Length: 310
Ligand code: TUI
Picture 1 (tube, protein in one colour):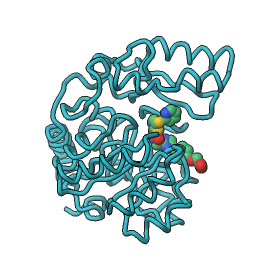
Picture 2 (tube, protein in one colour; picture 1 turned 180 degrees about the vertical axis):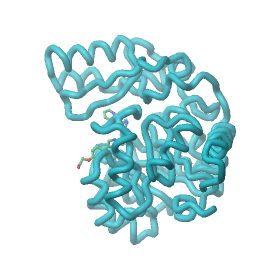
Picture 3 (cartoon, protein in one colour; picture 1 turned 135 degrees about the horizontal axis):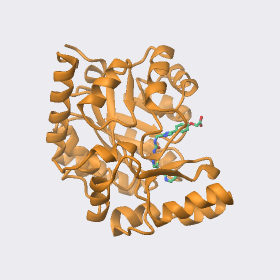
């Protein structure tokens, strides 16, 4: 059976690995692409040279398609937007903003553009300016999130646009994938599940924190800044939560947040790190290779659906 996302991108399974800042490097992205999904290198707030190097490393590791995620609030977004054209990247996903101003340049370079959107209005705008598909991300997701849950966002976006919709947020296994397809999505993006991949080079403390998390262990911080972020609970998250609740102070939140993702990913600093993860972390208890993750998920989804639907 044909699937619009698989056809659009030339991949085996309609699954993307989320472009997680500081986390999704060429090793993780290439492992997902080799496993039949779409691996995505995160540019986060990194300079263009870092991203160029990761793109070149990924090309050495796989000849399958992979993508680059551009965080639109990065100071290097403009430079990286040009770099993906120079490097012949096949797919760009975007986060935390409106990529409208880069759209023509990317389309002229033959790049498939798939923005992450948290609302129907932005999905429609993205379709109008030429997006090839959209990723509708619900607030169950880790990291920077919108207001709506995946369950309500996905079907409303599906009804509002003609381009394919990829569902993200709260999906961790074959049941979640089957549910996303029932809502009308024709692909999925998973971040948190790939944190448990052997090929995911995060600090041991980060991986263990995800593997040990239970259903209620994440919290949304930074609401007062206008950029709410879902993280696993720890000392820093409690401090940030208290600021939001009792004494909203965006500058204080920014100050505490600076470098905190690095502290989690590189240093494994359990008190002061920002351990971004989605609500589905509570479901995850084992490490696997990216290929095993993808194959297990689609075997389970196929069993539930009673047929191959991709
Ligand atoms: O971007 C993400 N997730 C992220 S980015 C990130 S790095 C970061 N670190 C600290 C503070 C904030 C971010 C960690 N996780 N997901 C995609 C996503 N995009 N979620 C929400 C949005 C979004 C929000 C508003 C997309 C577009 C948008 O548009 C506003 C507008 O301009 O209309």
